[in-house]
Length: 302
Ligand code: NAP
Image 1 (tube, rainbow, N blue to C red):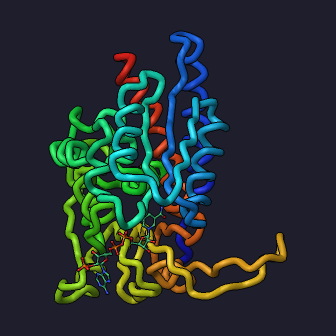
Image 2: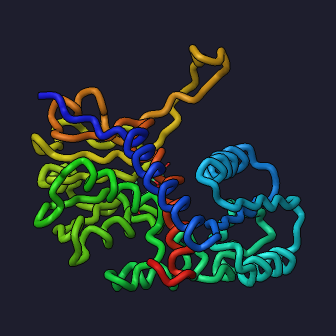
């Protein structure tokens, strides 16, 4: 058996098209567009490349997009007043502070200064609480877990009553996706188990999973023989395992592998995400959706 490939790039394009249509409609009816500011401190190459990708996507959707780049030596107080400025700016609906911040800055203090109603990353404690409560309380589900849920639902995989096993309990992936899938709601209603490094028998839990979500950051952690035949496997892991020369550009690029042995797993699973091209493309897409929703909350049309 060969699994159905869950193509994140195709689902991303589908959702971006939906977002663009809504942005155009709101612009026509209300004369406003979503506004997103990205605050980048320093010049860390990975951060620059993430921010560039976010900016490009926002521009393609017709958002008002503000890039606020600051030097590495910015004082914490200055960063806090910058955030306060955007908290008050009515044309800005989403504030994104690119991590990591320099060591002299208290990251938690800065992130907590973002108005929870503009926290489109969904990491502010208020939004974590809203997510936990669920239902209409939820404003901004964190982007990678929201992307995972979209991949599952749009692939037609039934979550209701499903045994879901999440490997990993980080605040950005494992805990929120587990919480989202156990809610009493469409696209959720699952029975969820969360595994981690202290889990006694990881193979046992993986074998029970109708939907297995792996976010450990350990290449090849999940063995093909641990999969339930026909299961839906979402591989969140992105691990650099070497370098190669790109055929397209002739430049050195990283070889990326997931947490699941894809080639063998696809013969057993019913659905599977590739790495790259699975979960990866969804994160920025969900950031765009959260920013659009922020505008809709602001206009009272959500
Ligand atoms: P993280 O903060 O390092 O958390 C990893 C989690 O996996 C921890 O809870 C850890 O358990 C668990 N774990 C590690 N090794 C394990 C093992 N051998 N057995 C069982 N559990 C194990 O990582 P993260 O930020 O959630 O990211 C996880 C992976 O997803 C990384 O590869 C990351 O690059 C990728 N990622 C991708 C995207 C995207 O595609 N957009 C977004 C975010 C993350 P303990 O808690 O016990 O230490």
